[in-house]
Figure (cartoon, rainbow, N blue to C red):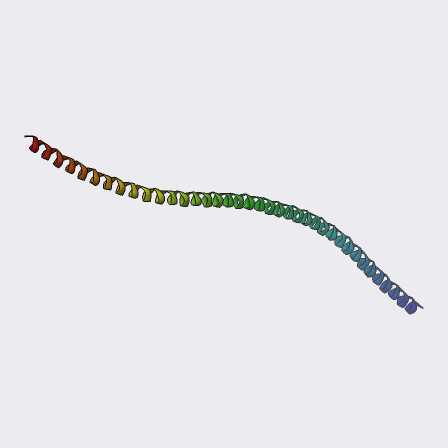
Length: 140
């Protein structure tokens, strides 16, 4: 019976060792599960922080796009205004050039007329001078 007892004792020790091994495995699994849950919590915190950062960045980009659009509109309006002023000034310059051309033509006509009248007056003066000389010589 002592062999049976020894075998039973050995079998009991083996079973106890297996139970300790199983308990250790179970404890390790629980530790791993607790560690995994802690990692999941950490990852969730990081994910929440990343999402908050992403939201902040998207809001910043949206704001910058809006400011860029406003500045672009402002400068486009300035360019259109400057182009309109330039076009207006060009039209005024063309008008003034046309007025100047007409005035130049009138001045040339008036100078030609003045020269013609001066020549006519000189001829008349010469003619009257000749008549005066003739009258003076016939009275003398």
